Length: 63
Length: 407
Image (cartoon, rainbow over all chains, first blue to last red; front, top):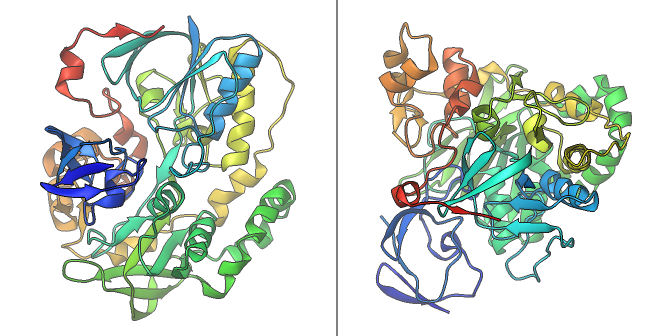
């Protein structure tokens, strides 16, 4: 499966969360509580990287 | 009209299946893609386990963000009307602040567990698990299983404290069998020990570890190199839906009768929001709630003695306040330091005033991480930080759209 992270093409296994493939994204609780890992996905801001499972073609932008 | 269950952990799944077996149509709502909750989190690589009952409809990746009468507002601009509501929203790790806890590489204990179970990822190669409570052991054990070097620092002295809890130990003997499987962690386990500071530039590199007295004041300290720290000081129940629905809260948890019924007659609660007791107790409570919501009498009793002993064996002692410096971050979202909180809160006695004056708890997590800490430091009621009319942050588009009725 192909996604982009800050414009860079990445190959990832289906079922991966953003937090699992993007290092230093601000994960603290990893269960959607702390909101430390917010990223922008396909133009939608404030998505929790630990909760969001990647889909084909997703464009992820970190802060 | 359906029975709506919020939360698909051990309590919620058992409630849903029990109500369905009693002839009810059930909608099981959960924020995760798969059922299981935190304890039975499914690996993304494994074949998905589903609820095996055709009267249960599972709504994954969905949160309830408000309750208005018996109408629930769901993310994605949907609403559902419930005949009965079962809240099984669970709990998350309580963390205590210490200098450097905002560095990358410091996580909650639950984070280590979630990443290991759900995604098969170890958060470090050389990891310290610190805090208090029996939950530290399965976390450490799951890290040992993926080849991580682990040390476990328990701030209390449970080996002594359990000696005073004979009745609870007998009541919880099946729990002891469960704990015995974590024996592989024993060589790396120390009591009356805590991480009281983390050090590093861009990432945690070392921690200060302290031997504690019984009130958690540091006695001797030393520095240890690590690449990750996972902390957990018990759990915080997710009370916002129960509070906004008007359910009575007592001693920090949702008050329920022997049928798991709350003070609001059509709403039931099960699992950790009624008291921290672990997955097995949550499952039993879920069965009772599901039956009661379907109007069936089971005559099932639940033994809470082991769960009640947990708070006596693994208390949070006051000495942690002495680990803080003036510059220690208390509220991670708004970067409020200990000094700023104390200065802003001087002479204030109401939670709302403290939040507005200091900004602690006003950030995007809405005091989920710092609420208990601020309450402890300023002697406020921690449940006042769980009053959140919008239970989970939602996009404005969700609010603006005309909601669709979920059948």
